[in-house]
Length: 329
Image (cartoon, rainbow, N blue to C red; front, side, top):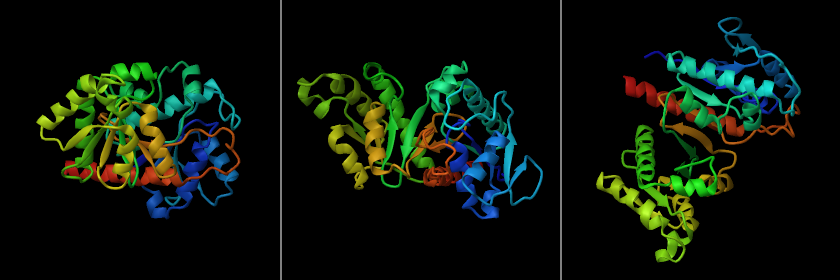
């Protein structure tokens, strides 16, 4: 199987996506840079190069110096706009970049997608009503279920649910969803080289309900899912009180924690690995990972954005591409 490029979607043109992308690309050798193509707005990319004061040449798709960064220009009316300003034109652009990336990856013309940050308000203002990248990608690829993994060198967290209210998150933590989340986590980690991942499942209530004193959801919803996973031979433990499980995983006791809702999983990993955690979509027929930060409108266009997280996302994308080639061999 020949190596296909990893495509990077530029993210919201008003945010820092273009800047972190060009900074990351400028730090690579020409040979390394040739593995990537950016899907976005060519003018915004050029402005980002200037804002970051970089010596980085850009080229059109399939043309120019091979050492230059390839940009697949996707025109959108109203661009380029102002950095740091929310607009529906930018929301429309975000959708078009991601749709193009999905089309290329689904057709086998790209190996993996790396996404720079989008603004959900802009996306919805443009008429694309998704809760973020993961939901959009699930819809575009025809998937009914998808999951968000936050991966870092010492802590990996997979979420039962993400962008819903806390009340809805509790309702969504059914035994079946917990089981599917555990299975999904195991399958991914095995694909990434861990033969028998050690998985911990966080409880949903304080102290996992303390025998019913603080709620019965852990007994009625979480534990049955864990027991079904154990019956399948999965190395899984839980539910474990969420106030200790992340420390235990971060110090080596577990390879993955199943979080029951957004903040339960995001807070610990962003505290531990703010610059190095990568957002990975699981359950899709294509591979996608992302930086784990937002559009940072307040510093967009200044050249100040830190590109370390983009480098981490590119590194993880390379591992996904390698795993994909190995599976196809």
